[in-house]
Length: 360
Image 1 (cartoon, rainbow, N blue to C red):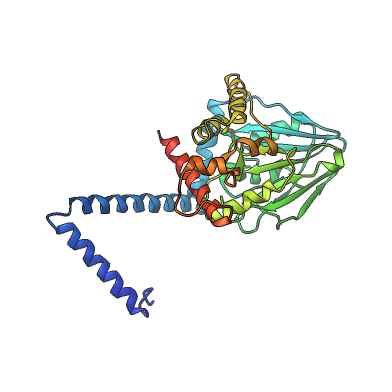
Image 2 (cartoon, rainbow, N blue to C red; image 1 turned 180 degrees about the horizontal axis):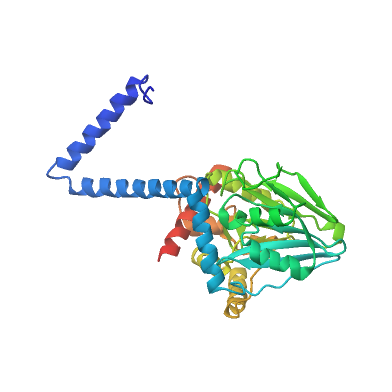
């Protein structure tokens, strides 16, 4: 097998020259600063490499499934009744039931109350989801998976085996376990009166989908089940995409109506609003929401749903077009105008600041 770059002599020459420069810097008697710089670069690169290895093991091998099962056992022992107290939303013949699973995840049942048919979104704990199905007295006919990560797809096998007619929907690009019905951007899943549209939102994973329940058939608000794309005052990490990819996906969501209810994949509200206060400390909408969230969490109550109208007012990851936020973040690596490139740079800077804030 030919080595990569063997047919490109310039690549070998450049590599040897770079290696020689590194050796000179390291052995030079005046190279303390250079050694520290190189050590920092090597450590940063090593951390990224270790993360990529760990992420690949989690998403592509049976080790990821074993890790998920361990998380499941621990969460069931720690939170026998779920990590949060949730409240269903009942509309005209449609019910949305959040199910707290693992340590901070949410699964959902979307129920056509007249036909007694249910759709499960991201059923990571099949035991908890099945208990809700039995309590509601409904028939599970579909599973909607936003992405492949085990904390969102881990219940697919058990539930699809238990409910013989249950279909498993998701993106064919994402390697979702036990997928039976692949979906593309803007495909619609129909279950009874439920009309649910899949929207492609890559970034967190390459095949990430969000699901939009159309409110028109039941004369109520539309509901967005956002997985790990969008949280209350936050957004997901770009594990398999770029800042530009994530920005485009967030813009897809921004095109929806203000009254759309946001049902996220995790309970991250208090932490996210704390970070939003760092970058926009004088945002009164954020302050009001934070006070409400803190009251909810003191009683272990769920903070979902939010609305997209609310999120536009305080979620920094949806506000990269706002001059106030641009000024608060200061000069970045490029211009801070309204073009996609500069907004993507702001999004990346927000992500980096969020990581620093979390590590303190």
